[in-house]
Amino acid sequence: MAAVLFETEIQAFIQHLRIERNLSPHTLQHYGRDCVRFASWCDEHSVSQLQSVDSQHVRSAMAQLHRQGLGGRSLQRWLSSLRTFFHFAIRRKWLSHNPALGVRAPKSPRQLPKTLDADEASRFVDLAGDEWINLRDHAMLELFYSSGLRLSELVNLELPALDLAEATLRVTGKGGKERQLPIGAHALAAIRAWLPVRSGIAAAGCLALFVSQRGTRLAARSIQDRFYKLSISQSMQSRIHPHMLRHSFASHLLESSGDLRAVQELLGHANLSTTQIYTHLDFQHLAKVYDSAHPRARKKPGPAS
Image 1 (cartoon, rainbow, N blue to C red):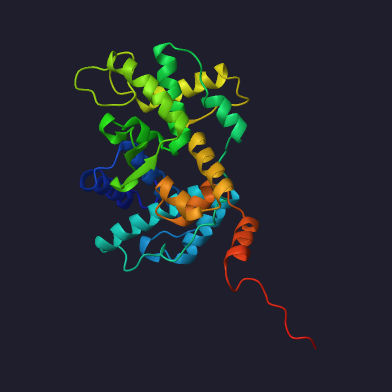
Image 2 (image 1 turned 60 degrees about the vertical axis):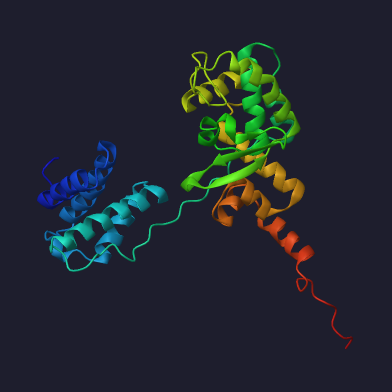
């Protein structure tokens, strides 16, 4: 690390993160860079003692970074790094308080997810051909779109999780939370066509639903590569990513049902606000649902004057 203000303290902080928290070299690099950025600002503004740093210094340094083009998410990470550094400094008795507490970074605009319309989604997942790879990819695409799976959920999906008689499957999502999902008719037919072929390819003891030519579990990167190739072969206008089918699933289901809570359950979201972002639900739609559903939403005409 180049010689900078607070160099000894920052090096001790990074050493603490490396040994006690066992963070990756990549993460340690981010922490170090964020701390050096603030130290450089302090050096430029004659704040030579760590004990002299206050919340206004943190705000001013953040404002300068913002003017230099750093976005909201980057500034939030920078602030988080400083809070952690200052907390470490308090433990070492270099500081008596954390000057980054209470300082907030500007919010970044939430980008709406890209989705396919219903016709585009149907065209993409309706994969033809009776080669083993076509049968596998067809079942994979249909299941993504039918059940709104995350990429990791599809990768980890195993045969015992399927109940073809009931047309359902069990997946384990974020935080180890398990949920049961329906399998649509098209996905069910595609899976039934794939399973006999899979049994001749899968390695002994492999329970993964989707396997590679070697008979082992299909990796996330391999699925992403297949999506890229299928985007071309299916004549899509742009590259399709696995998560785009999940976005499309949520969007199309919400447009048809208007049941935000049900979509939240199917997606496995802990917070309803996440579902609203996923499905780019706008305020006008919310207001329409409220007006039509809430018993006291619509004003009753008042008495004639």
